[in-house]
Length: 205
Image (cartoon, helix red, strand yellow):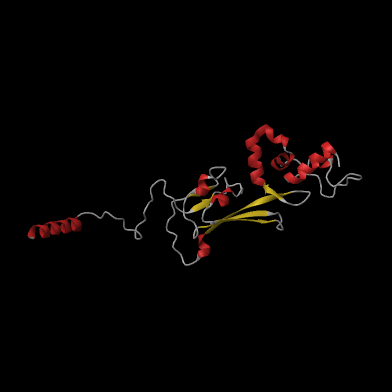
């Protein structure tokens, strides 16, 4: 009965005189290892505002809102760390692979939930005919860069990607022509309006 007590005493003495196995957090900083899934943050240089991160977020921690009445119209992406489960799906499914990244930030305790939001804004491109949202200007430019010469098959991509080109004014007169005609082909249009224009050009009214 005495030997187990002596063994426990020896272990207690070793614990007293040996260095600590645990860190002194929060009194000393603790560096997480590589691959640690911490607070997600948007990367302004690489995010194109496509909204793929919001589509795959299982916790609905990323919200996408389009403000078409602003000048210029903007898309706002807001990420809430207080709802995030740090699964990494946003980073995994980002189309640019770098638009949103999981950081090593883990100390997120706060009494103000507003401090746990991260947001980014992008300029929107609207259809010149019906006013529907086509996408962000940065997203369209990214798609045009990826397509290369094939982007010339879509006038919307060319007009938005090439800043040196001017667009047809909204009040351009087209006497005797329907609402969507051949002269509208080189305008920024949503897929629905472009389809209507092409069908009318090929098959008539």
